[in-house]
Image (cartoon, rainbow, N blue to C red):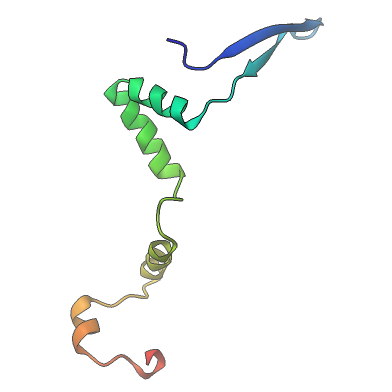
Length: 92
């Protein structure tokens, strides 16, 4: 099973680099990528999933990202305080 469609063309002779090759990569559709993903063994699928989760946060809502920044900066309050105490004047 071929994972990426490649074509190698001889690009010429170079005395510095020896033989040079031009690699042409055929673009893949989303369906092709998904099919390739499904064909991977479970351990490799886990690595791909981990990579996507760590490197693409487009699936995380912006509101959640903002809340995480607030929490990291110490701008949060526990639920009991939020529900049962009057907020400070600056937050009213």
